Image 1: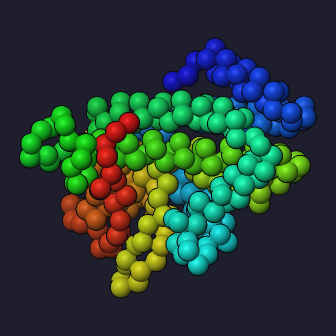
Image 2 (image 1 turned 180 degrees about the horizontal axis):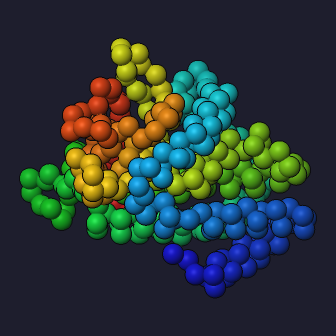
Length: 293
């Protein structure tokens, strides 16, 4: 967790970078506040295990934010990016074009150092949560240590995926905010101007990852926003005291499914029984990734 002193030094660094960029004072202040918002995301809170009851109280808010995200990124679908997942890169490309035209790549790259730091903070907090959580370990036939290239999922791969996409999402949000200031937009209508606004709010609400995935339920295949949230079962349940990842799917009014850290998304278990889910989530995004943080 970043101390107040470290946050202040990071803000001072960002302010110095922005003052040298040629932006006016209002834009500098706006972007410093944007970075301060990212610094204030409660990463330790995201990776604290919560009761299912407490998480269920947030489901209405989660669904509202996921509705906004779905509608927003649906606008960016194109011939070459036909899924919601792939469409997420399109608003960033537009922002990067504006940054390139304004010859401001050096400035955004300097600011993205802050996002890189936060990505490592995210990985550290996730790793600490795994120390007391239920985990799927590497199934490497050759080594439990040199397992980076194994094709099967593991808790280390999930941590790496979470931290990487946290960095990408925060970086995209910051780049778009920076491009908007270069383009003379005042940020007063940030919800419509920055497609990643609801993404940031979902992290602020306690989601540990952000995945558009295809869900097959009753033979209906639909791309939905899926987010894991850390939960702990209470003493009265079949899974007493286990610390795992609850899985919230857009539209669910309560947490219905869970999995161990590193388990693939096709091995979800029902909250209220020991049986598997009666739906299928197609993609485990970290199955073939490399477990490097």
